Length: 167
Image (tube, rainbow, N blue to C red; front, side, top):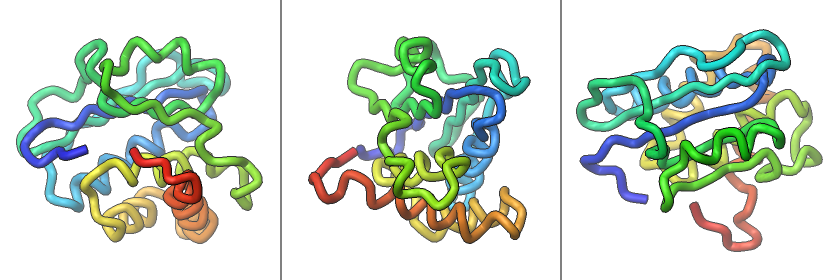
C-alpha cells in the first residue's frame, strides 16, 4: 500500500489488559520516528481489564484530527477474536483486517506479546522502516520487555511469508 502523500488510518481494538494502548503508542512512535505527522486518539470504550478498547492512530504529511472517520480505517488490528465483528464496520472496503490468528501463539515465547506480534504483521503493509519500529518498541516498553517483544514483532513480521501473503 502506498502512503506517500495520504493519511494512513489505523484502528487497534481489543480488550482491556491486552495492550491496545501500548500497541497504538508503538505505532505512533514508529511513524513519528519515520518523519510523519502523527495523531493518536484517546481510548474508546472501557479501559478496565476485559472491557472493549480501541485506539486510533493517523499519520501522514499533515494530520489535523486524531480520530479515524467512521468506515475509513486502512488497517484494523484486532487483538481479541470477539472484537472482530464489533469493529469491522470501521474498516474501509479495501482496508486490511489483521485478526488475532495472524500470528500463531506457538510462534510467541510469551502470548501476552500478541499485541506487538500483530504490529509486526501490520508493519509489512506500511512504509515505516524496520529500525523505526524497533526504536518505537524500545521507547514505549520497559527495558526488561524489549527482548521478548522484539522477538514477537519479528515473528509477526515473518508470519504469512511462507504462504506468500502480502499486506
